[in-house]
Length: 345
Ligand code: NAD
Ligand code: WQD
Image 1 (cartoon, rainbow, N blue to C red):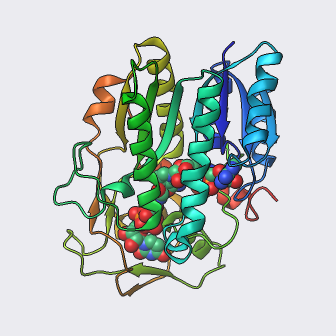
Image 2: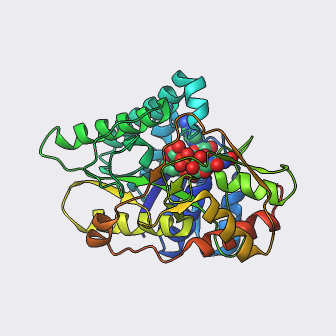
Image 3: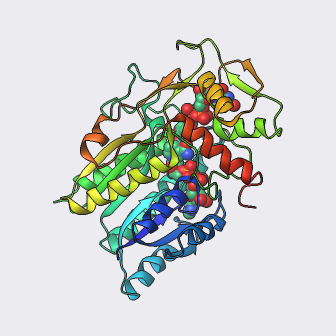
């Protein structure tokens, strides 16, 4: 049974990935500071899969001695960490503009720390949560992995910097490293059970949790940022991906890395299908039989018209295809929100 360290594993994408990993019989060590999560998500995973083996270590990846203890304990327990899936980090674009240093410290210093400890313990396999935000405002859509890296906000710069660091580590010697940078597009939805899902602390910025708050009556209306974009209906187009498809992409990436020679991968993770804000609203309404009041507002600073993944690379390389469509995302995401209006609390 292989032991995998999952940083940020109590969070939205991390928890869904942990569930999939336990179903594949991996033994997990989850490191999370709970700055944007609660470990109730992990308790739910144990409930959903009673055979799961998860050790939770509460702490910050920037704490070198804590991280050393985590790796050391695993080694002493004769289950050394074989690979790391690295979700831990801060993810709000707006917050990163307001407080860039906090983002550089948490995301970049945190990753450097993690990589130092991985080197110390000769653990050379890592899957990193990168983001489509690193492409910035692209000339072409769908976006391939060869598109220039051109972030437009500090959050995006931190993700691009971590990718650069990882590339440097890979190229530094006769590489023994197995590295995958997974560039997520727009993850939404939840596990179909409604038992785990997205539970951001504080006010969400992303459309899906905001949309759910409107349906719950916590917000009067959805503010649609612009109806004058150069898209077919004037609203922003994104590549929404079901969080379970995203979680499964991590399993496929992990298996691929473990089974193959050391290598460095950059992979887009999206469905390849664009959905406009208005289409998302209409689909949500029809699937969940509800009404979403909305108003058109000015464009949000920093937004782009279109961001859709060219996902040919991951589909041809890995044993993975996205299986769930936008209707599934709306149905499953709302099931979680409606069953748990206060999240895990
Ligand atoms: P999330 O906030 O739900 O999960 C991140 C987890 O990391 C949280 O549980 C948080 O408590 C933890 N964490 C943060 N900083 C930490 C630190 N220094 N030490 C230890 N734990 C720490 O976010 P998510 O949506 O699950 O995103 C996971 C990763 O995927 C992030 O790196 C994010 O940047 C990236 N990503 C997310 C999206 C998205 O839209 N959700 C898109 C692209 C990339
Ligand atoms: C989607 C669409 C908005 C809110 C962000 C990050 C990106 C990645 C995913 C982490 C856009 C519109 C939104 C609202 C709206 N995260 N919208 N009203 O901006 O594509 O990507 O999350 O890596 O880095 O930038 O996602 O969900 O905020 O917006 O009209 O109240 O919904 O304009 O067209 P985005 P989003």
